[in-house]
Length: 384
Ligand code: IPM
Ligand code: MN
Image (cartoon, rainbow, N blue to C red):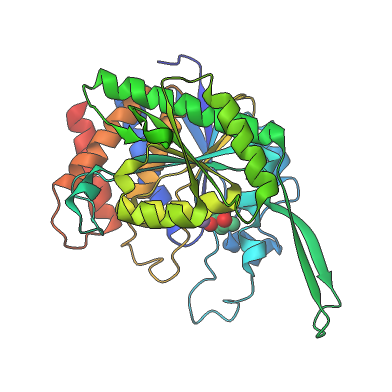
């Protein structure tokens, strides 16, 4: 266990972010006490729509600088984008491009070039697919997080007129392709080792009719977007040579959507561009029980100097915010990912087990955020 002190920034954000972060904070405190973790944290009121109401912006001008400067080892974020209660006159004031911008600012500004979204159907989680084999869903979607469709370059010419032109530039670099694809192979190897260690066996159907015990699937749209699609494919083929134990597979994004629903158990590690990864991970979340249980992180696998950002895949859920019924599971599984990243594997495992036991032991009746949190806290204490 790490002896050095570890400092976190907790950023609840807004909407259900406030409620699920309260759950995460209680769980962190319990884990800190029971495993004597050298953890401390600060709560930040930004970014949030609440901060925007007071200050006219989602976060301070030097917000990013503060996150870099203040020695945080990791950032835990709840959710962003809640416009507030329906009767609030300011309700619709913020556009998504304002309220959600901090997420993209952090991912880019902290050089967090990989987004990892595991999708594993835990026993007891809602299973939306009828095929019993869908119980075996256990994939890791790795999303390129630094470029591609998200570079926000382009513009609108002759806005509002019939002759208006909108352009949206996409940029793909070999450097970014190499590092994200290499990372996918590394994770596939790790998962393969872990399965072996746990006595699990998996066979994945790969390209050229090969069956392998680990797989990386590259997603592109190279039939319509050949420039980046071919470059990614070349890099993929090249790197595959360095990982002979891992089978490779290629899917076009449209076919991948179909196969995620038809036979999601055939996927192990999936690597996709920023936008394709964004879309696929909402789909993957549903395969694993829904957005209420889908964790996510933004990391720089090569360099831990700047803090990584941990945020569930879900948003601020304005429709249920403030009612005390938000499911904290995604936030807690995200917290477990953060603990793993911080080399606090034992605490991460205890948390994941407590969440898994909680899911398995519940009937389908709706429980409050507090009820779920208390059950998980009790299980953590019992296990310690
Ligand atoms: C996500 C979200 C964000 C994204 C939005 C809020 C900009 O959908 O984290 O998946 O597209 O990356
Ligand atoms: Mn998304």
